[in-house]
Image 1: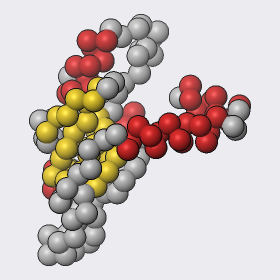
Image 2: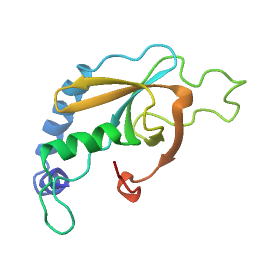
Image 3: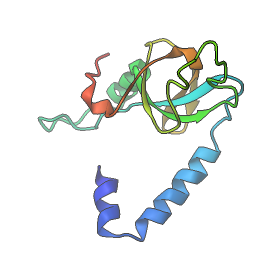
Image 4: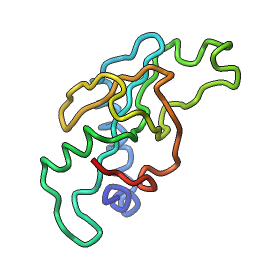
Length: 135
């Protein structure tokens, strides 16, 4: 949220942040076939009561997270019209819910990403903060 307020105060930061995001996402593996790359939700470092969370707690929560943001989709995602007659379940940029131990965990700088199969997406949500994140 701090980034959002700083970008609204200084519009020149927005293109710089977009460029940095593009550079970082280009480093990610490219999913093949029907696979989806999801970045698990990471809770705030500070609780509502003002308590700072330790790095171990934040890391454990991210590993146990069942909610994440779709970063990339393989070229065959949701192309099977028999399995998905209503079209894709999600798209790049959506917040999704998946099973706790679904997919493969891939360690990256700053945490981990998950590589899921298209059918491991259980639901979409508008705001990941609306979901209670316990581990």
